[in-house]
Image (tube, rainbow, N blue to C red; front, side, top):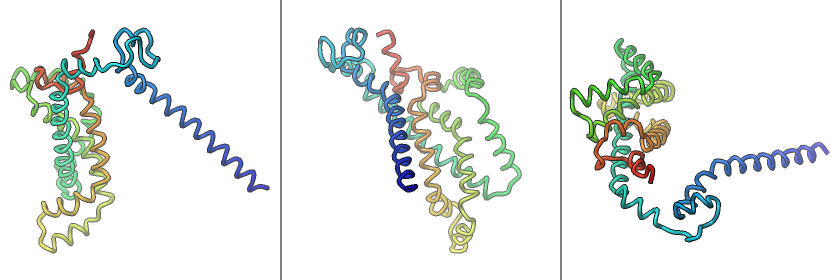
Length: 244
């Protein structure tokens, strides 16, 4: 009898959980549904019947054709790929190497540098935004260059990445593996790239996902650095449709 009651309760709990999960899923997916649905309508139909399937003109691809022509979509897409992929690759490489040195080298300067990195995480970008642009633009003339944007992406993202790698290396990678490699004649660099870096896959995968999404969708920093339309990324190029 008790087992039947317990089974019934579990079934009810599963149904309730499924219903709640479905409602939450639909709630979050509804805006995406609206975007996709209205992308095939004319501007007038979007305003008059935003929830209807099609409008007076039916489904149309005019919006997509206009997007490709007006914002030069393929070129802008390529810019976003170059900036995002290069930035993420450099963040992963430099932050993993930096964290490895912080953990394995007991230099006093390492503790100071690591503390400064952690402290920099609490400083909002808006605080340094104007001085940064004034220095790089006014003094060095480095604005409107893709490498400048990549350099700043890497610099502003290093602290969090080093923090995550630091904890993983310190707590999950035994130093005995590196000592064994050193006995076999492996250099410090070879030990890092052949033993330590492959073991960092969980943290690396997490950072790739986080930073790829963040940098791909970043608007503020690229809008300050890139002033020429030929270097626009997707978030900046979408402003070309403002008021359209």
